[in-house]
Image (tube, rainbow, N blue to C red; front, side, top):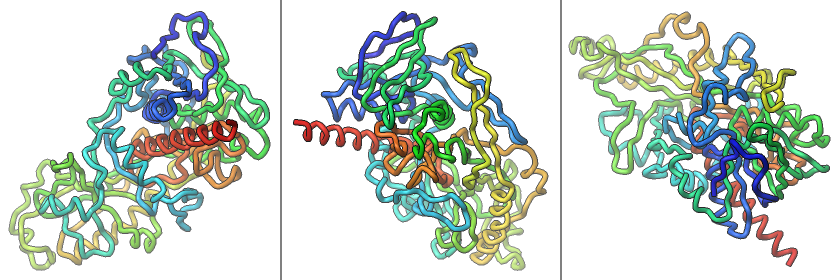
Length: 492
């Protein structure tokens, strides 16, 4: 059932078993999974907006301060209506690599407290939620069907091809609207703004909600899941710091720290074989997009963050003289060559100085506004640029091409391009000293508070986060459902 509280005078329902804050991909998938697995539970899903894009006046809660030398688009990167940021999602999907889960000595604060193989069944479920044609992403399975569209790097110890798939993209609010309406044990409340929580010791007892013109209420819940997006989730958790139990995730010194976003740059051009297709390619199981990347061993040897490279043909790519490639001094294989610009997506290192805090200014619901100090370390970009020498050497050794670096002022100056991927500021760790939530996405030291968001990512890879967000959300829903069933059996 869906209830719009825009003009409501009072909250039209009582207590619930699970209250989920935020109706984006994480919140919607969590709510519907729980509603299906636990038909005996009452699930409430809160959405601060309505079904459609709100007016600028209704985005007041997203206003905040972006400080430091790299301004961040706080309002433009978030959407406050049903479906959340899936409403402007490009649909790129790819699991994180195995090495992205591992602690890397050259990247302080990296590593997850779980292994990638623990997420594999949930990645498979996430591909269904995101409407992908397949959960197959391996180079071995996808490379043969693409022929000469790819660089042949099978014998390289440095380079490999990796693959993205594409959601339609799934607009979660529209795609799953009928499911939300029909679920008999699920209430979706629109224009229901979560403004705080009440706590008793190590338990959340209720979620405080603002709605309508002046409506306020507290919704009691046995379990609470915060799924407000990477920035707003952290803002909401920071509200509770004053009443946080000592040693809990809400009192963690890492809450608000290590905010990150994937960033991109184009530092080089390359001469490579003609008609490479490092963009969307048709495939029997749905479109795939290859990217060049470093092998796991090469990342370790070069001690660089994870990254990928997309060679994109320049407008005059085919105008190079065919005789140029036949110059024996270049060592290139015979054939036609084009000029490509090398567009990169780079994994940021977890940086505790890149952080979200609260200010003294408040929004129209009385919630403190946020302050984001986003920092991109020059070392991240420079380390990747330096390893392009190794990439160039590998291309040359196999006779695949030549690479030329551009002027640094063209790609190191100013603010880098970003993906609107809000990562890391409520990170997952084995204890509250290192992060906010545990490997099950439960807030350390709080019995019934959980987080479903890219904010929990402790390190980031280069893959877009939505598929991993949904994998973690469906895993969390299954754990909550199973724990509830076990608890009921123990009481009977």
